[in-house]
Image (cartoon, rainbow, N blue to C red; front, side, top):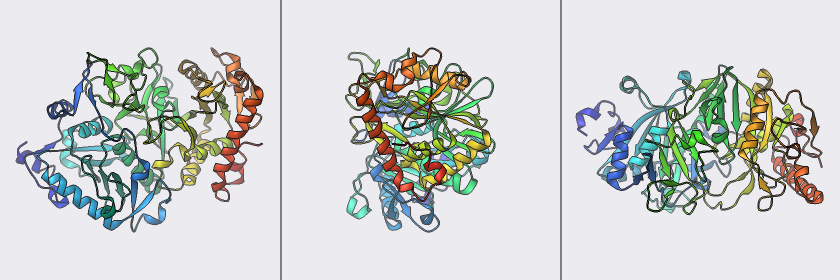
Length: 534
């Protein structure tokens, strides 16, 4: 691309140490990016026109390799822990210098200006510098896309450097391994090196918004999906990867606001992103038609294989990873909400994939129970979502997103509790995991049944039914729900041996109690009362 075309919007590249050269590809169209990927051998086209790539060594996030720079202005606010690992500012400078030197030696790079936050008042402008066009295509799909007129007027608030083929030397870089994600709030930089997993890009941006919005703008940032009905009734779905946020928020009867990351301001809900990043392992047209039909150009499909002898994607093949993914622009979903904003929610759903098989498929929570379970964030990590996870593993992730929370979980929980009371929101715990026994012996709760129960809750059909109190966890379980076998609503009824069920329930309850010990003296007695009783 000729230098005169790019010199105006990219006039600050020299300040960053980057050389202006002909090999800089700025703001290419999705079609141009796909052609570049094909010419470089980065992927192949499916029969529906989606680009299919492999992300290399990393097919999931690597939380132990994510760092936040310990620097003046933000250090005292960070909740330093296993996810928010500190790294000295000198190593930021070292890694950035290595990335710039590496990028300057490349014959080509791809640069894109995008932004996060659908609410114009909270817009965050992002410039991403990619070593590979496939990473730039991911940014095109996932972030909001400025108009040509906006590009001339807008300067980036944050820069992302993404060099998946640059392996760091850990000793000299202050990292554990040759791959790393480094975030600097002072310098407004995100450095990603040594990993080609595109999910690291979106989650790094989510992390900075989880710091900026609550701190500077009093907006609750949330790891949730959201949709809206014909009566402008918003519903939001909290949950970790693999619990069903994308699937359950994508409904033919409701308009999708977004599938993963949102803010809740005084005006209501707004999406952070311009696209969806859905799991596609065992994707079927009959069960998830909206996602299935969204996989066309410029969708980017990761770590799947084709059916032998064809260019048809084999969604059942997990030989590379269970964490197969697809990114696509929001407008690939029919009837998507534009702009991607909505009123404050009427219903909140906490999605959990219970590997023990003891939690009910749906239950109503009191305010204190809601706060307790929000802070607990119980689920089972699904195979492949993170490096080293091969089978479902019980975990507690504060606010259903601990790896992305720079502040203490209590900050987010307090904001949620205040909004729940203010807007009189109904809160439901939904188990998308197992029933009738733990993982390996029980049965996975069907998507059809889960959808029916969520629909009943949203439409108010559960408001007039009788509930029964769970003997240990205390939440209210509906005795009846239209279209659902009554015995499924109470998990004890699905187990053959009641002693086994009672033992497993107590076992899980003790895990909740032990996990919550670290919040003793930090949260109120009312929230503590929302936990299980043995």
